[in-house]
Each structure stands twice: as C-alpha cells, then as structure tokens.
Amino acid sequence: MRNRLIAANWKMHKTPAESTAFLASLFPLVQNNTSAEIVICPAMTSLAPLADAARGSSIAVGAQTMHWLDSGAYTGETSPTMLTAMGVTHVLIGHSERRQYFNETDTTVNLKLKSALQHGLVPIVCVGEHINERNRDLTEDVLRLQISVALEGIDCEKLGPLVVAYEPVWAIGTGHTATPETAEDAHKIIRAEIRRHAGEEIAAGTRILYGGSVRPENAGSLNGMEDVDGALVGGASLESDSFAQIVALFAEQPA
Ligand code: PGA
Image 1 (cartoon, rainbow, N blue to C red):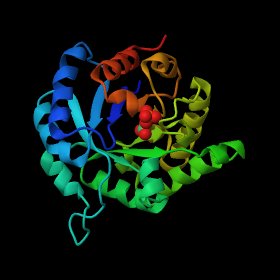
Image 2 (image 1 turned 45 degrees about the vertical axis):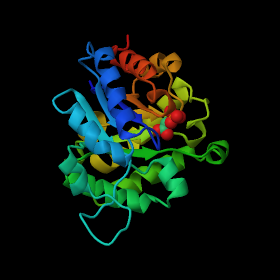
Image 3 (image 1 turned 90 degrees about the vertical axis):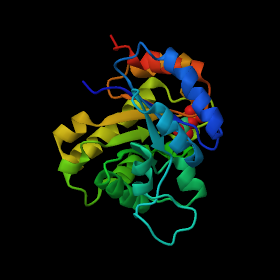
Image 4 (image 1 turned 60 degrees about the horizontal axis):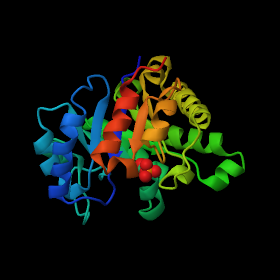
C-alpha cells in the first residue's frame, strides 16, 4: 500500500505572512489526518518562514524548483543545499509552467532529479501531455519519453524516494479535470515506464500523483483509482478549507 501524498503548489501566490497564516489555519483542519502526507510548496520567499512554522509538525515544505548545482554564478537561482539548509524536504521538478515559460527540458529535469536524490530531497517530477498531443494519440509516447529521459543514468537503488505527478497540461488551471479513468490510464503508462527502467519493486512503491484542476468535488473519485496515490493541487490549495477537504478525501482508504 502506497502512502497517499497531497502536495499544494502555490505558484506565485502568497507573501510570507500570508503563507504562515495559511499554515496556522490548516493545522486544526488536518489534525485528524494521520495517514496522508501533506507537502506545501510556496514561493521561494516563503520557504524559510513556512519551514520554521511547520517544524515538528507532520506538514512538510517543498520548493517549486531549484538549480541542480550547489553554488555558482547563476543569478536568481536557488541551490539544493540552500533548500535543505532551510528545512525544505521536497522539490517539484519540471512543472509544465517551468517547461513552458522557463525553458525546462527533460534533460534539465534529469539533472535536477539526480541532484535532488543526492541531497536527500524528495523529488516530485511533473510530466504530462499537451492537448494537441492527446488529440493526436501521442499521450503514451510523450509520457514514456518524459519518464525515460528523467530517469536516465540513475541507479534504481537510488530511486526509492521518487514521486511522479501526472499533470496533463490541458487540465492545469482550466477546470477540465481528467476523468478518473483517463488519469488511471496515464498513471499505468507512467508506472510501466518506471518498471522498465528501475524494476518492479521501485515501480510498485513510487507514488504517482494526479494534478490538474483537483477540487474537493473530484478528489474522492480520483482517489478511488488503483494507481492514483495522491494529488498535486494548484488553485484549490490556496484556501485552507478546500485544501483540507482534498486531504481528507485522499486520506480515506478507497473501498
Ligand atoms: P491547478 O494546478 O490545480 O490549479 O490546475 C495544478 C498544478 O499546476 O500543479
């Protein structure tokens, strides 16, 4: 049984004060949750205050991106050692907005994944097809390529912490959630590709999250799918009430 993981991706929202206020309002709402892991990925400026405020609790803090090197002349970037020094434990890698607006490629995803694993950060690698790729029946090819380049050259013994988020680009911020069946099909493709690279044990243990317009209204049915192990939540994670509802729905064991 894979432990559920629910991650909030706040993107470029919330000041440090707003971030810690959110956390204070979330604590009582999730105090009965003992099963699902909760990770909040705020903007860089909120990482340190949020990690301080979450210390000792069951809520983890993740970055939305990072550089793969420890230091260097890379203006504007943040390194994995800077993240771990703040108490950050997770990192999103290759989110589609990073790919679309900041030139991230499968190759940089691979470099970042290697670096995250080396630094003890839990990597949440984001993959997903564009609508034109889905319409041309290319979803399987796109997902297999994204996963296979991401995992290239990494020993399977190192891949234990890997988390993958399937985020169809057409579902992000659009309100057009993938149906549970569409998500399940994609998650099965992703798991099969992980199995091909890293073997059965790693594939069976890797959490695959669904992301793209997850809401309290659709979280329960997504959680009912065999290969959906949690969610990466954007818009609906900005309010503690809706995020806590999603956590509660994923914390329930599917029948
Ligand atoms: P959304 O974003 O839930 O607002 O669709 C998800 C994401 O981009 O991770």
